Length: 526
Image (cartoon, rainbow, N blue to C red; front, side, top):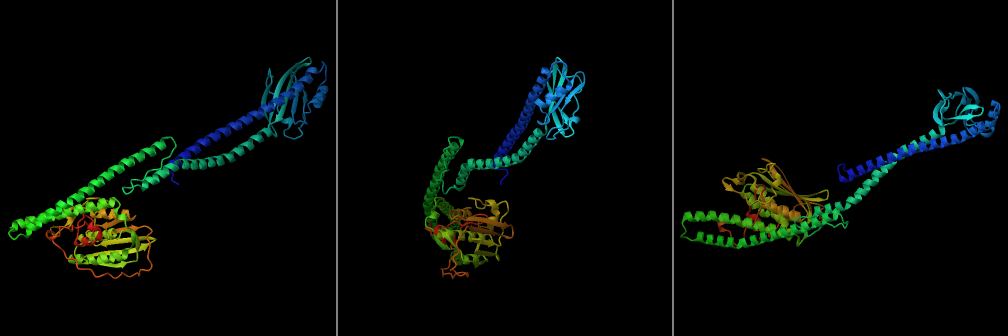
């Protein structure tokens, strides 16, 4: 349970409020019952006192104390009714005192007489006896025989017993009521916040690939409904803006390819002219390198625009990722050997995923090309596939220059390049446009996979692609599948590259560039 959540805090406040309410109700009930019981006892004593007053008022002058006592015993019967009666004639003559009550609730002999002057009217007081407290009602009576003080009493033990039982009942019920109130309040708050939770879950699923999805509208007629409608209107405006940007990016990328191809062709024709001076030929060669870089940039932008439009989800099939990785390694082995690197793909375990074969191959090509470019001579680039806990993994690790920790969270951002000096080797730029890893992340997102990087500067990098709940095809043997013989891939200078085959962007860890092997990926021929 999240103690900082809104539901928990509302439930706590609800429980505290109800606890205070129950406490006030319990206290009111307790003191109300106390007042009621004492009032009832006082009224009962007043009625009995009136009977004694009548006996004294009706007694003729000269009536003996014994006669008064017999009349009280006959008409009031204090012992039988568990009452205490004491009659005193002024100034201090004891006329009558009752005996021990039938229930033995108190001892009349231990009840002290009223101290001080007699009251002018009936009063009640609480006195102590040897067996417990007693309520005494004292009433002055004026008769023809003289002035009398009538004291009538009853034990308070029954009243205290009822109050104690009520107190125990409240002490037992109050925690139960508070617990029930807290649990019920939490459930009520959870139910009230469930629409917000559904809105949050829907909002978490919305991305640039599914901007047509909308939040559920809660027809509550309050601020919650207004919030869902406002967010849906915002999503609609955001979708229109993103679609406009995608169309512009795709149209611009497509339109730029033709003039770049024309410029490249014209420059190549000029270079082939025997009468072209050597100095001009060198300048044209430098210009052709920049044109090739622009072609890679435009090609990368076009690929990203198609991925954003859902191009990678059109034709999904069951793809044996181990076999695809093995064939891609063989195609790029010559590139690695030219750079003096060892390309290792011996740890390819059977792994079957569902997706676009061409785009998945583009992921492998870009990650391998990235590792090859930034690994010094004598290094090792390793590609492996395996299954762990139901998830499929594709990993490309190298012993290269690594990535600084501050740059690792940004290597998948578009056009992100770290230190330009890291993109050069022996004075030659090996970095690209900074789109390669962005393409990798877009393809992985389209396939429901996650790509991450772990790197230590000076010790190499590891790029890991995780396919959640990937299927493993048991029929495929654990060994690396045999690779078909492929034609050797020759490195072609940028000045002699055919105009109709622009190089596709790859994805180095520090910047993006293309390689000759990238042209072998079917997805790069877009």
